Image 1: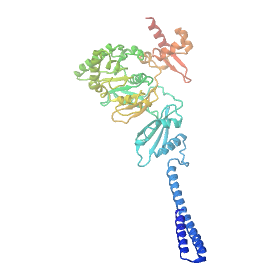
Image 2 (image 1 turned 135 degrees about the horizontal axis):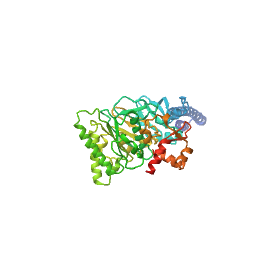
Image 3 (image 1 turned 180 degrees about the horizontal axis):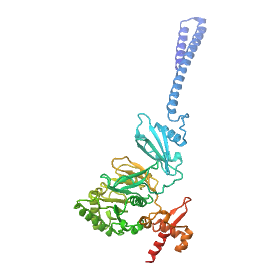
Length: 470
């Protein structure tokens, strides 16, 4: 348009000049044809200019479409798995290139593995769990981690199943414990008798399964060793979860301590036993002692000044020096705050088990590294960190019969008599709810049939009823 105006202006100027030259009657036609020619030339020039501008605009739009297509391409190559496709598409929209490697199905969650593209910054993958939860319509937040397997995205299953504890062949080692099963169902063992793993710290909020985990560890030791090999020193200040332990008999090094003052006294005795063993020339015939503290902060953060001071001292001594005299500690807490458990105790408990916690900071306090323990599923879902090994996610099996009768009885299962709930109600003269409560708290032995129905061990029921009348 600008060219057309310019040419027209020059044409009019020329026309005026023609008139000035005095061409007489020919001035008008000459001016007209000159103006007409100028207009035509201007129109052609403007058309070419408009076409050039159009081409540039089309090229710019095409470049924008091409750039946008990188993130919103309608032609996404399918992986054959709907969830994997959704995850790839979501990360592609965020400018993150991932290649699907495969999926491993588990009892509580499925693990989707991806390989990051070349030059992909791994930090860009963080902090997208809420987006994935919404995208996948998951009831729980998926857990994203990075390891030598690639980028792992653990997606909770709609229906979760729990592995039940079963007696496994005894592994090689001096005092091996079972910590749980990995995603593929493989048992994960650690030897308390090894130089680098004599003690364990486990932490988790209410509902994480911490106490059940400790029972499972006890059960594995008792299945693989005798009281001549292993004995327990138990501090149960809650006085409920380890009620069954009072009937462990020769498995107990000392009676169960239910008060914090008694717990401190028990810890003192353990340090004295350690001193005694230092002077023994041969420890081969001496049983190992596993000190179990279900809630350590009742002692380490006690409101009683002397209890706190002495308790922390003895806990620290056992953690630092207990390995050689064969005294081990299994320390649990629902309140894994750095201010509640001194670092000289935490740092000397090398096996770290983080169950579901209230905050990410709690998981860091337990393990010493940044873990998403607040996103675990609870009920035995855990992270385990063992010296020299990578962090692993495990599921603690459910121990359905952790009672004194099971632990102390050496009879085979074929010699036991099992009662239906109806038969047990007649024997005990109590309701089904009471029977279930006794069983769940470890007072009587029970099991579940393949169809999920409870059966109660007659002998353990009779023993418990007899103890109530004493």
